[in-house]
Image (cartoon, rainbow, N blue to C red; front, side, top):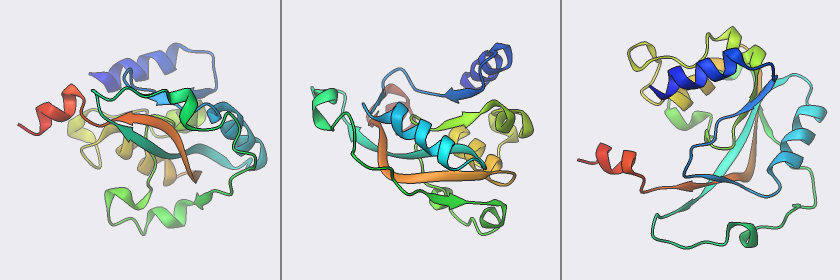
Length: 161
């Protein structure tokens, strides 16, 4: 299971900041600058992310040419705290893609990592993790894309059968 592999990698790592990026997705060129600024400016957050730009498998994209290397400003995120987690009614109430979601190891430890399917609050491992982290810590979500997300992967095709 992917969640087990991710959990093992995080557990064995001495790093403190993590990004889970699927093999068929790509981070935007300004990603690291933007995330570094968010974690520096908003010291209480333990997770940060944003949206994505979708692409199809057969498209040929010059990812580096689509967006600037620097967006030229520091985005002001929407901050979600513990009180906001009580208001969640839909999966997209905290809307960020997992490819491009950065989190601290302390947040991962506090929620006991990514959970197996049977144990999750919702069926999606990334959204389950994000929702559980936001019940304990502040989370920042920017209205900027953080990754290019492939929408017709083999997993999606299998789910549509």
